[in-house]
Image 1 (tube, rainbow, N blue to C red):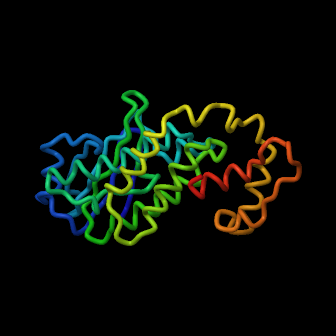
Image 2: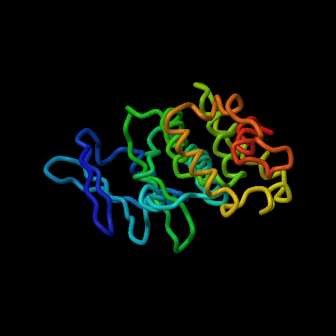
Image 3: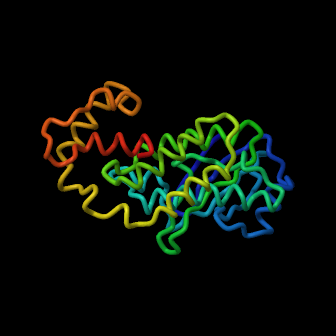
Length: 239
């Protein structure tokens, strides 16, 4: 697949796609919330699908130099589950949605996230979403306790080969039901844990910190402020 992009459009060239494919016609005739507007044209016998991306930024670009907190992670996850549910109503498969941060776009004008729908029988939504969640972990602000619990809760669901989108929605709902009072600023603040988080990052590069963390962490002083690693352990273990 050849991909071309400018400020207004991203174009994907598909040699085997028929211009009259019902999936393309379904999207063109129906404005499905969460899917980028697309146009199809024939160039040298090939079908070009162009997606309108003006005023939009890919998640890859958006989080290149910053981290995402709970609000942003929650929005991304809800967008994933939402688009999977909506396309089914139009007899479309979620397998044809590109779940890749490079091709998922955020529009600051309407505060919405958009996906590319690209018919391709070779993709599997379950596998692609799992990989996407693993990518999102890398952009998650690990000093945000609620964001960490959310993304690892979703990853735990996606680790199963036969998970359902409904299970991801359950993770979202259950966390929201806990209420905001459990996540006050006194629990985790950047200024208190900047130094410890740097140490966390260094350790995580060399070992599986998420599965072995409990064995390596002990409190050095009885009355000392709770260590960042201990907080992370409780988060990842579900408290």
